[in-house]
Image (cartoon, rainbow, N blue to C red; front, side, top):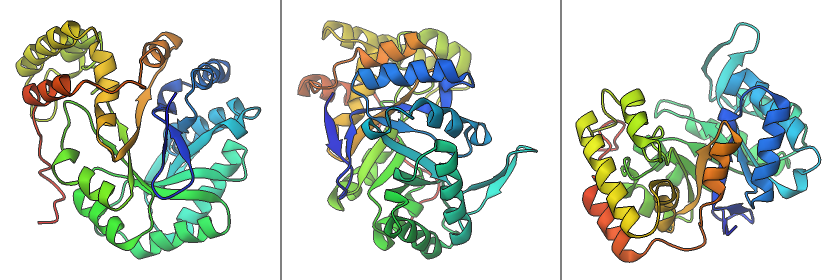
Amino acid sequence: MRKNRLGKSDIEMSALTLGCMSLGTNKQHAKAMIDRAIDAGINHLDTADLYDFGWNEEIVGDAIQDKRHQIVLSTKVGNHFNQKNKEWYWDPSKQYIKNAVKNSLKRLQTDYLDFCMLHGGTIEDPIDETIEAFESLKQAGYIRAYGISSIRPNVIHEYVKRSNIDGVMMQYSLLDRRPEEEILDLLHKNHISVLARGPLAKGILSKHGSAQIEKKASNGYLDYSMSELTALFERLKSLVDANGSSIHEIALTYPLLHPAVVTTVFGASSINQLEEAIEIDVQTPIYKDLYNNLQQITRLNTYTNHRIY
């Protein structure tokens, strides 16, 4: 599988990333999923300390013990949680970030993280203090690179101006094209990579899309109504069928067409779901005509909250 460089770092990340949040709580099942993903050429695994209040990191840590050298490992911090009572609150302070990363390392059974992200962020945060925490961790060798996971334009702009982040994870799909308006080109210009999450838009952009629209989008999705989603799904299906492709394939590869995007992050809870993703050809780009048609029949959505102006 093709690999792309993360920001200004020396990290090479596979074009598809296995998001580990959906792996479940069975260690044997999770290991089988991770082993299969690695065998298929996926080298990037993404988790977070808040997923199952640390348990997801423990599961991933157990699964990768004999494969750590093959893996680009990411996690996220910033949600101060209590593992016993399952409560949490936002805490981007320097001391908490540093402690949280060290706790993640213990759960993941490794002495370094390839990439660590702030799991959110607000414009009211002590941003310089948060940056200092990550820079200190990087200098000490606990992390190789850092970034943020955010869909807030005002927060992203501040980190672009004030930090040395190498990547931003954000929601980006055919149904959520908001990053195209002002964020993707900005990040690319500053040599900051995008990790595109949510490419299947809650499963709407999968072969099970019709059922998922009824199940998860009865009130619509972003600025699409349910009826619009139903009609769009049929148009997309006809378009990709005519091009010998599938909605699932187009959904996972569309974000990769922008040069800022280094990987598409997908989740899977079963081997079958994983197989549906890894059988997709991410080596061959979407034809320009198909790309243009996809943009014509979907909306260029706009961020309405957390703007800088």
